[in-house]
Image (cartoon, rainbow, N blue to C red; front, side, top):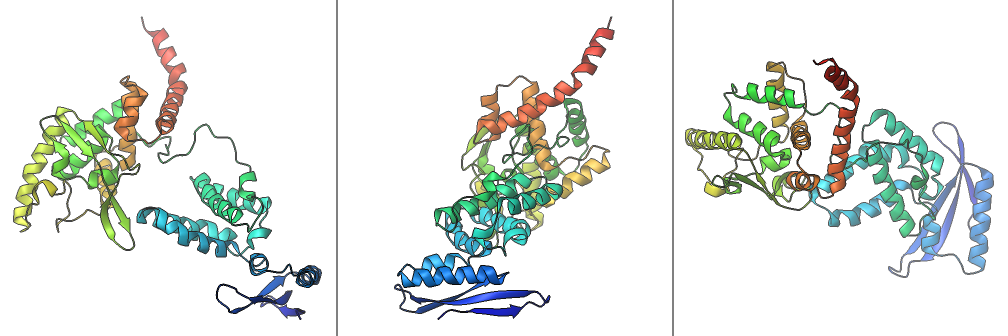
Length: 387
């Protein structure tokens, strides 16, 4: 017979628990028991009365009783086991980091069915104060609640009722920071500074990002087979990934699609120069050239370059030349905004950048348009002052 037991936490607070015999699991033949814990004697008494009533009516079952004690973290572990088999290793690792670093510290210990909209709102408000992509964190937490609802652990997803401040731009896989790209004048000066960069590997890498708009991971996965010198094109059909199990490896692009990008002669000429220099460097390091399979950008062991390395390359180069600091992804966004300025249509830009959804391209365009709108009064004044 179940009964209420009183116990004391390390903090000195009093709690109550009810040990419940659930019967024999029909799947395993093993007897199952669980312990339900409550803050007040009243809550424990009500739960015990409910259990006693259900047992007398033959309504008590394993799944129903154990759901009451499932925490957010318990449900997360169930969901993660399924989720792992549906995504790439890099995506799985990123998801685990998001949950363990941001979501579980806020919600992990709460019983899943006891989490309220207010609890979720408080978590989102705290994420918003410290994280730029707090909406993404909120969406991941919401996925877990959707899973819990689908499994019958909760009736509704409380995260869907959280209030978010209005935003002018949807957050997507191409989040745009207000100052993380160059204007036309800035990029022209950037290219002028590149002319004096002696390291052709770095110079080629920066030009491919800025003049072809590749993602950093896509550029690091390029092989010489992907460069068509005659037609001046670059084939983008893979990206450098990192996983806990496999380390660095080549996988599909972010959108799982391939694309062929035309580049200007200036970029092709630099790529040709780097090809010759790379061959000489490989000989000096006693590494065999891999032919068409040879990486464009290799480390001293002729393997993959650490994805963080190009960030240090760019920062050092920008500081040395007194250029405003932007990221490698900022060069990609620079390419995108310059295409807008050149009058290229949205569909062509979408295909060139490899955006899966044209909405992503529109988001960058909207941001660019807002920048122009803010500058409109000054441009008008300058125009009116002209003779």
